[in-house]
Length: 253
Ligand SMILES: [Zn+2]
Image (cartoon, rainbow, N blue to C red; front, side, top):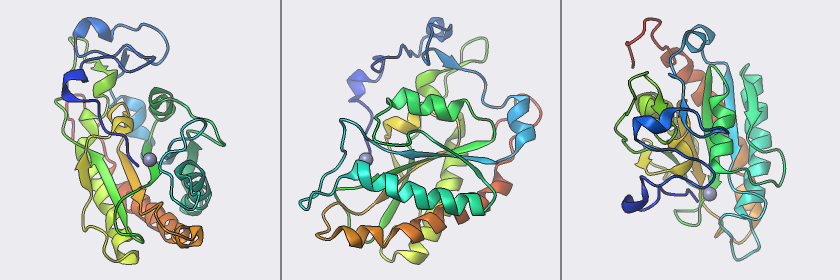
């Protein structure tokens, strides 16, 4: 399942362990991963092109994610899926970075920090849902956030995704298209939702949600892994030409 944003009344509150704020004064570094992210369109990013895929097996550790009646745990299955997605991406020539390797549970900010440390990367968070027609897959991109930058051009941590929403939608639609070819009944285009993990990620970022933990036999989910892996890899490859960010400052996509 995909974790939503906090309720609107809480949006301005800092996430646990971080000190993000929309106010310019908070963009000065306060240590850790809090504060702000540098302009996502620095020269390094433009020259690198898309070469890295950050894979995020969601949940883990004390957070099992969605749980099915048959003892199916989202946190375990996404880790198995990620092995296959990683292999498919590497066959396409991508370098893969994972936000967790085993049964740990890095925070949302830790996972975003892993992605935000890369140049030339996209971010893919993998989930198993507790809803939806079994055998289908949905791609989510973050809903619109007003881009906010302070006078130094720094973007607050909790708005890191804002400049990338257009690219995220393009990437998400491509991956969804390949998924829908394989998994009939899936949507035709990426869905928009408030996804906490994507909000702080300064890269084209999507969440892929596989339906669902309600299957009685885990093998029904396992059978989907090769198709999901293939769709993510083909989607990332197809997205490469779109991952062109302007060389000149100010020419944001
Ligand atoms: Zn989830």
